[in-house]
Image 1: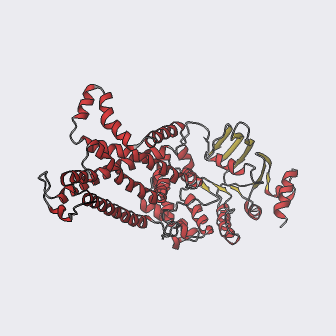
Image 2 (image 1 turned 120 degrees about the vertical axis):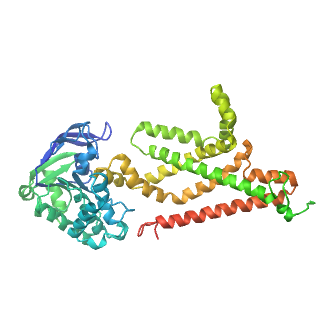
Image 3 (image 1 turned 60 degrees about the horizontal axis):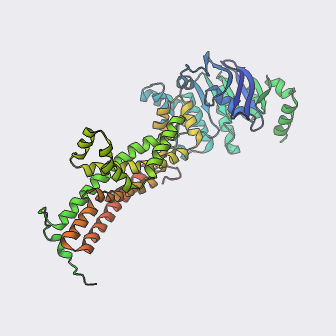
Length: 243
Length: 243
């Protein structure tokens, strides 16, 4: 579904953020990307839907080459859902309108169909009664669940999560992770940048460990948690799992 | 100082044969309002376009916006009006210059467009700041949903940016009204111009300018009140600037 091959990215000629990154995510697979901050994991995931350009290598999503100048990027992005660290709901729109905007403007759905779809998804994330509120009236965890529903409203073929729980208070993390676990179990293709190793243990098929722009480890979940092959991954795991 | 106060002067007929002196001032007020409203429309439209250009990823658009703003804000308004009114018709091809000189209401059109363009540079800078103050993720979220650049601005960035800059825009609207007084120098008989002619006909300088001052204050008080109502109307529930 998502094939990343030999991707290099520089911010300036001196600073390389991604170094020869190669991996892939098969249909229905859940891949967790972890690593210390500044390791390039968010950058990598943003290259998948071309929010960040890259200079070398190829990324293909469902057969469409992301870095081909002829690719209709808005059309491609509409099929790949993305959830951000800071939710990024549109503050001037009601919750239901947040869910309808792209359905109507990008997919051309009729308003009542978009609303029906939106309400269905809000019910699914347990926020149906908040449909007429504005984002600032919801808690962080609720906003992030709305953001997931907003991405799902586009009927995505894959979902990208960029540290979806990092900006949340601890007691709100589980409500967001629960939604993501359900999604994973339903067979959604997911690429998740996160430090939530409990989530990785529960639903990930593979875990990718990145450090300084490189994919250091790319292993099935059990191998990764059982015995990481690289020193750097071991050190990282011991730091985040020790308490 | 010996000065003959005569507050009854406003109800005496003016020598133009157009009614009383009060009618003279009110006709100036109407012209001030017409000029200011047209100038403000020009300032809002062109200022918004240029302000958006300054935030686009395209370097060409950015540099055009930069040059536009620096051209219009770095020259005194008075010099700009003289340029449009006295210099432009001379440097145009002869036929076009003649057409400009013979244009009916030339001072009105020159003042509206001149003040409008001068103010548009200020609107552009404020809109740029408003868009720049939005979290970077807002643009990314719009893009990730498949919205095109135009749609992203139309539905996501501009509705928030304009709400944020509404208070400073109120000041710019007031400045537009006040700046129309400069048009007296190109022969526009707006409020200040009519106060001057009342002074010349009647020698009641204090009465004339007291009346003009009060009229300016009243008009601006109405604008301030109107903008407050607008601010409250578009405020977002739960959002910082909202109530």
